[in-house]
Amino acid sequence: MAVQEARRGSGSDRGAYEAAHGGGCTCGDCPHGAREGHRRAVAAFLLRRDEFAAGQGLPAAVAHSASASRQWVSEELTQSAEVVAERGRAEGEAWLAALGRRTAAVVWAGVVLLLLGQSLTAIGAGWTAARTAGLAAALVVAGALTAASWFHRARGGALAPVIGEDNRLSTSRAVAAAWVLFVAYAVLVLAGQLAVASGPGRRDALISGLGLARGAGAVTVLAVVCGIAVLVRRVVGLRVLGQRLQKVRADRPRAADLLTDDAGRGAFADIQYVAISTVALVFGAVRLARRPEQLPDLPWGLAVVVLVSAATYVAGKYAEGGAPRDPLRGPGTGGR
Image (cartoon, rainbow, N blue to C red; front, side, top):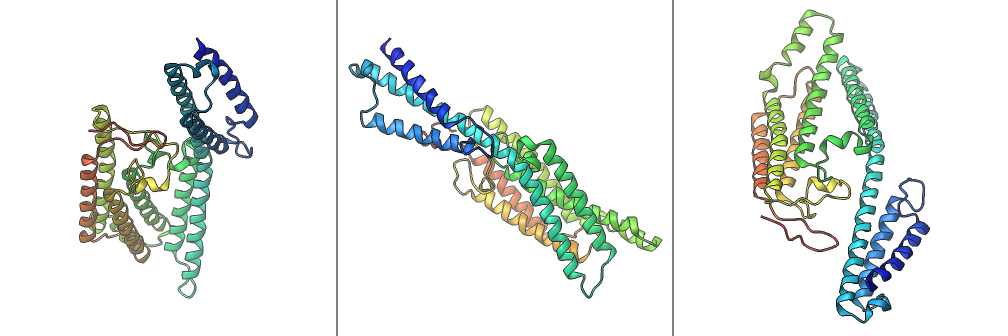
């Protein structure tokens, strides 16, 4: 009874604190927005924890009883941790809403950079139909990504498909999405040239550029990385259901998620998969720039390297287990 009476007073004080500081506000222009609310909630949690550790902050109604004091401290810290989690989710949602606009801006900045690069390289060589097709393909891809950003504006914009159920960026989905966009862009470049081709010979040459013999390496890599994205999602889902893997939801996705595990430690399987895939994509982009009349002919040696990297990534996903570290409670206790 004493604990309940004391808790009523504490609850009213906490309500007055939140009303004064606007911790629940999520508007981007307010100085007490979602980020400020989360920061204040974490600071309040740490302050309460330190006060209780020093034997302070206990109401007189429960100070005389050791069991009542322990119950009071436990309930107070639990409620404070719940407030921190709620404010963290609010901050993550506000950040995701702003991410959609930033993603669209980055996409169109890439189109501008492509235009500048084509303009500079056209000096002396002249403007060609391939350059026009490349710019038109970039506009189509940018338009599609902008539309996706609008439809998924509350979930991170165009990045929504690569954000996992645990609110982290998925390495397998990000790599697969990069290859899908690259191959789609290459096909659009060929389609643009085919649309403005003047003679039947030129059109036949462009159509033959889509032949499997020309781009077998790139198509094989595309099929494998897309299959791995589906397989890894299935594997992780089954391990979570079987309680062999614990996933703690993150407050918001971060770029570092592509290279780390759930605890924030660098993961070799993820790092090598992203690094090798990036190198292969850069090589493919150079080949496309040199030969825009055909699909990028990724050499089989490089394609095999990517496939070995993908197999290593899948093996790492099968081997992982345990629980990530909770920043408020320390290392997780779940696991294999």
